[in-house]
Image (cartoon, rainbow, N blue to C red; front, side, top):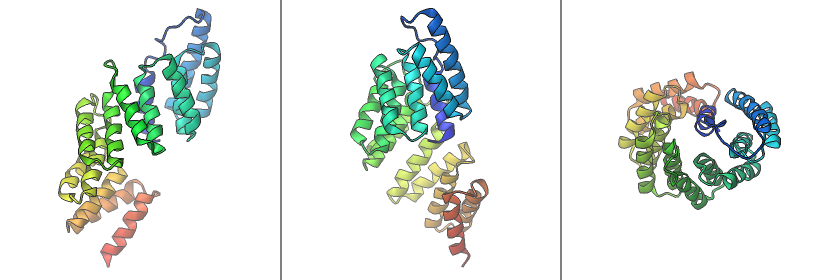
Length: 255
């Protein structure tokens, strides 16, 4: 999972982590909340093993807090342990059926496993909660899922909705990139270029967007602009597969 996106998900799903009430004795909830605070601090700094230890302690003290199970599920996702993540997220949803963030995370697991209809159902469940704070994220994931199903019309509709509903503009670069990918897949680089350009304007370090922009520019015969895009990829992400592709293409262009 992209680390910046992981931090966004944490913030969206756990910002009210200490506001969940239950019948557990106060001293236990207070102690569990202390462990949750520690876990959140570890998670936001990418220290997932210490975070998981804190969450297990919180779970022992207050096993019925859905946000604890949600957070455990996120860490399992980060560790590429989908089965364990699904169990934790499902438990969170048993405790709080309208937990939209958990529905979205569960949907992304279904998506990664190729269970596209299940993914769509999860994202739609997230959106059925009128109090869901970050619906743009669910619409973005719906767009990705419909694109994978090769339903480009629905994908573009979902992406447009994601941009409209993304209050803070956090995922707009991702959405613009994926709209560009749909258009590029249709052979419409004339339309894709604008979306890739928007993505890199909003997120200048977005290496894959620079790469795809260069590839589209090359298809349009704009060799100079394409070379600049590939050079940007190499400069910003020198040790990635994106940079390797950019270098290979630049070699071809130099002949």
